[in-house]
Length: 185
Image (cartoon, rainbow, N blue to C red; front, side, top):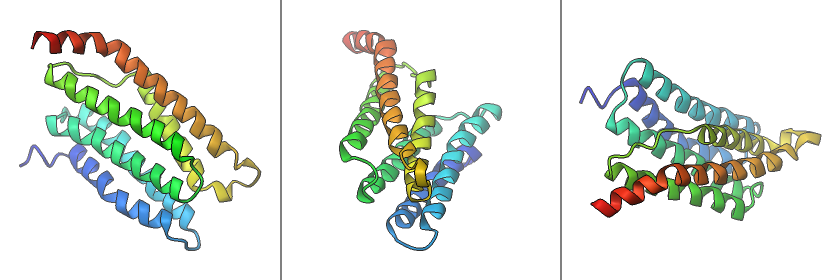
């Protein structure tokens, strides 16, 4: 039990627990709601950075953490983007492209893990994550951006492109190894 309740794992669980609050805040109209939503989203996003940093620093990288952290990320990003569709600020087709890549690469990671292959985070993957956080943040507060409201859609385009590029990067880097491993099994 003590191995499960590491600080990094608690941060990942906390990120997941913030998701329903984020959705309620985003979809409930009240004065200052967008700024509260932005705060909740940024807090959840910060736990993504912190859990990995702390896990490496304290040598608390665990099998649970390796599963929980990306799952928490997918849940957070998916919920935020789907909420932004409902708010009419994110095109559904762009969100579906982003989410399809996320779930495809998650499935690919699972297949790779079954073959004993660890797909470590890549530079394009880190750029993708940063651009997704920026795009979602800008779209949450689009009403407050005034003449800069176009930054949100532009950031979403960049996030979608980076998402596709990082997905291709993972498939090119690990695809042959995963295919070879699954053929010998």
